[in-house]
Image 1 (cartoon, helix red, strand yellow):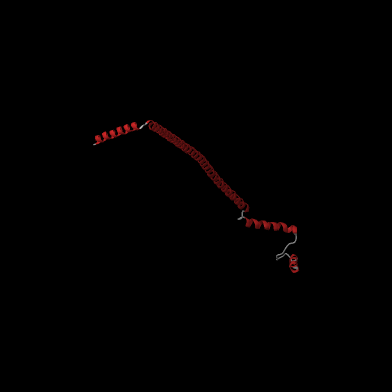
Image 2 (tube, rainbow, N blue to C red):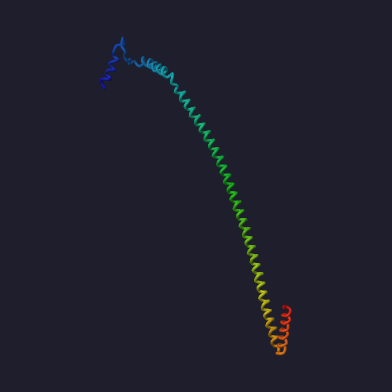
Length: 182
């Protein structure tokens, strides 16, 4: 490393006539170095517009962001419209469901009333049938008792002579009936 620094130092001691060397005088070399650097930058920097490119990229990014934002807003509006539509359909289903429930409730109440009415009719028919049966039973008992009473009266008041006359009259009636049929 010492050899490399010695070679730079030795370059400073060479004479400036006819050779290339490094000038170590700071005041004399600074404006020259700056003009060389500026010249190189201007020459090579003409084709490169860093600020313009950066500005263009930023503007493109902003435009893309705006387009994406507009697309997102558009999709959001579509989603909100679909949401409103779905909510309306849900409300419609809910209303239809409630009306269907009410309709079914009314149908159930009506059918229950019909069943109750039929049961009431069956009850009334059963009561009427039982009343008629009871009336018939009472009639049969009354008739039976009347017949038993009549038989008792006949048996008690019937003597042999009356009994023979009744039998003879009945035999006579049978004879007349037989002649009519022949």
